[in-house]
Length: 118
Image 1 (cartoon, rainbow, N blue to C red):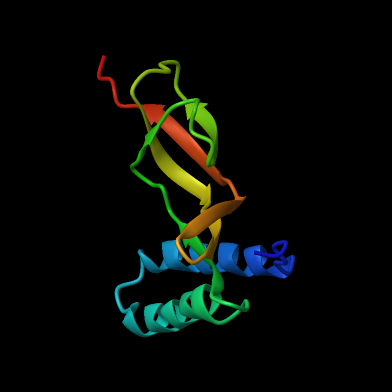
Image 2: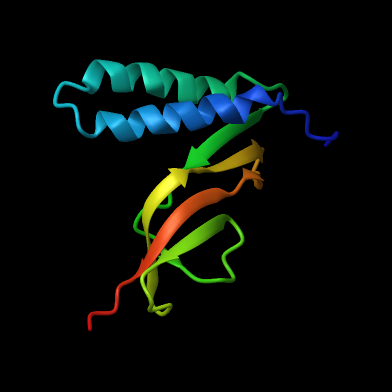
């Protein structure tokens, strides 16, 4: 595989699609807008790059977090640093995919908080 050539503006556009999807959660009639967003995401995954390459993003909301996690940059909310979970995602993880391989283009920016009850 040749060197990865991803136009600089592609992650910017995917971050905006992610933001729009998050805002749609608060709209009751979001189906038609979601369909358009799905088409944009499909374009980036299957058509924007050549030779079966693509870009996809992942929203890690609700997933466990620990300091060894390499795909997120986190801010910890609260004082407890055990049993952390991602409670807010400011930017998603963006992956470059080629065949069965995925590489991180952008780490997620997240806020995490302990699930421990005190």
